[in-house]
Amino acid sequence: MNKNNSIVATYPSHTVAEAAIKELQQAGFDMKKLSIVGRDYHTDEHVIGYYNIGDRMKVWGKTGAFWGGIWGFLVGSAFFWVPGVGPLLVGGPLVGWIVGALEGAIVVGGLSALGAGLYGLGIPEDSILRYETALKTGKFVLIVHGSIEDTIHAKEILNHTKPETLEHHQ
Image 1 (spheres, rainbow, N blue to C red):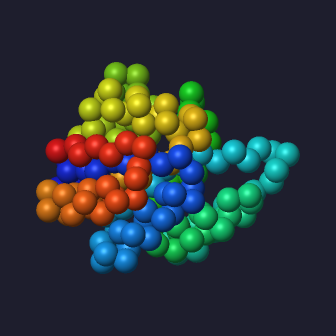
Image 2: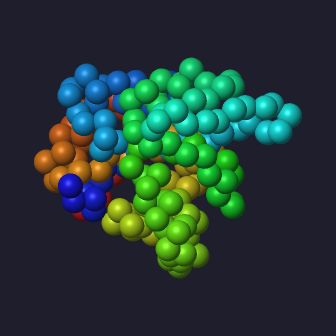
């Protein structure tokens, strides 16, 4: 898989993002090529639990049903605290790229760990800043990685889900 081909879509809510993921799944898209990022609004006053069972994360809280369903589709999950963005839940292969950026101490023009992971996918810095801004405002970012054929197919499917933004990065 060429990780430098990506489709990035932003959605206003977890409900719409979940519907988009289900559209991809129903179309037979390989869920191992899909990542999602969203904010976690829970604080110490609203205790939430995170743990992994194998490759699947379990979450409790206000959006627990959403994240629990997402972790059932995607392999790889993590919780990150990103300065300037806040608490993020990440599912899919993007987790590995973020961890790789953290472990390798990659610093890319002052980008966050999330930004470094996205930059590693070939996403330009100006787009990364837009995605981080979308996350800060409570939106969800859905990323499809794969071959050019995979990403073109995913773009056709996601176009029908009416994302707020839909960009193809090659």
